[in-house]
Image 1: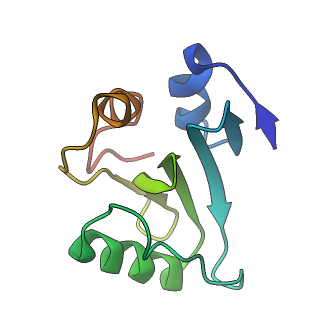
Image 2: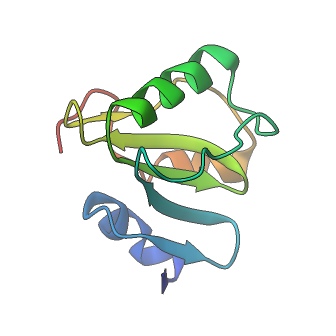
Length: 106
């Protein structure tokens, strides 16, 4: 997994490369056959968490995290970015700004 600085995050996310950035911003690709990730402790609201799990069942998903919370994901099944319109802390909101718009094709 690549270790990047925050300035390269937007470019790395757009290319859908797995990375970590000093523990606060990270991304990883999950395959449907991977052990099911546990997003229940995150701050992602239930309806969005359910949508993320549905995407994981349909095919590979690239998930962007702020701390432990999924803030955006790219579903390879529908070739679309999903970025829930959820307000978080200033830091997480800044991280959200580095992700492609909701509904944007990849």
